[in-house]
Image (cartoon, rainbow, N blue to C red; front, side, top):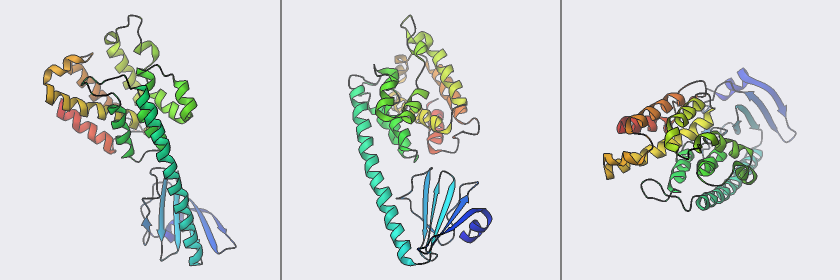
Length: 287
């Protein structure tokens, strides 16, 4: 679409600045494609929340943040270049801050899981690392990547959700809490988690049906990391590797296929995402 068509059809307000800049505010009903004669700045964008385009011919900058598009039209080239520099300084500086925070969360996760091992015998931290890596490739908000590193901390260690809340904020804590099994299910009175396996999995399946998109992405990344490891372990150790689990292979198949159905259900479904498609391929390969 041409930028003028977009402005004419959807512009809700226009503001003219004294320095020669005209600002158009546009309420976008659907995600827009790159307008004609614009270039997408992927190194400054952070999908799905922020997308930025620039046009040298039009001397325009378009910034979409959470569904609202703002178009800056610059009469003078100097103003156009100044704002480009400002954007680069602002968002590249934020990226450095983000990476520093990510390193801090990783160090905390390493400490929490330092005495734990996977069923294959590898250090447990390898799993949350895989989950975080999968989420990074989906261009999700950084808070969700943090939750990927921390998603098993409350369930598998002595760390309480209040610690996550105090260290990393409400959003990260909410994400982690949403994929943590209830206390009464993960710690049954008998102390035997095998007895509550089916009940715990049924609870997770039902929770994912009504979960929002971010929670589904987090849970799906967890399942994808698990099944990739499982495929590798079965190849290396044979079908006997299934004996290490709390439920037999046919029950595991039921669980993974049910999770796929939950992830693809509702208006917040993630059926078009890479993580979902990869999980579906792995389920077909393993079972």
